[in-house]
Length: 172
Image 1: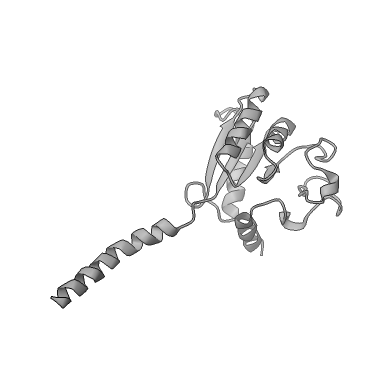
Image 2 (image 1 turned 60 degrees about the vertical axis):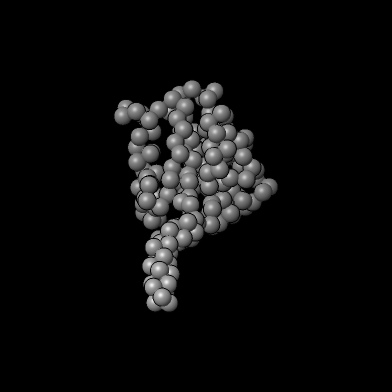
């Protein structure tokens, strides 16, 4: 009788172990992608989206495998951006990627003070009101002029830790 009980416990543990391990795994990180244009095939930001996905894959992130992306497209209607940014914040994304210039970046900035925002603009982000110069926590793109007073090496204060770890390891 004891042998049968032992086998029952062992088989139960073998079946239950993978289920318990799966339940303990951390949810995959989520990026909120806030675009001011349309996602259609003739969209002006299609190349930007492709470059965004390529950059993620170069740092070890593949959409659907180890990172999820929540897309919000304003389709040229900038008045929709604030509501879309607020929706991404409500969904508790880990970082917001704002694509489409100053309007989408400002909408993301006004929606949250706690979620990091990554944006791409062709103007000085301090002069446009996207970044406060006194905070000293801005991450400036290498494509734009920057100074030590308003940039942070390797984005150490602007990106979530899961992204910084992967980005650092891929740059080594």
